[in-house]
Image (cartoon, rainbow, N blue to C red; front, side, top):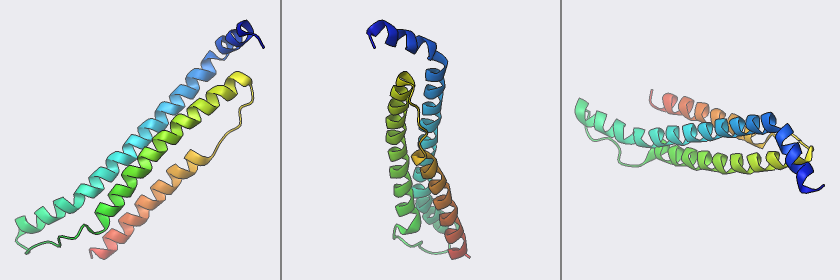
Length: 130
């Protein structure tokens, strides 16, 4: 395939490329959201310690506990999702140009696992705090 044919194919696939870019940006927003939630979860331990002091319930435990570890894991998971989203974007871009598109489930599975992990963490945390 010469350069003119390849350029013509890219122009014909413009809408498909733009849809691929929108999907990539949606994955980036999702990964940023997961990282932001991880940051909030990590800082939640600090909030709880301050709340203990304000309410006069004594000194809160100083160990990082669940929230710090889980928050750091979520931040790392969100960053990994962003990197994988870029890799997926580039792979699909090439597949669109070559007319060989094959869907991939890796990021879908990661998003589902992160939501499941958040739910399990919150359930454990709420049960533990009763």
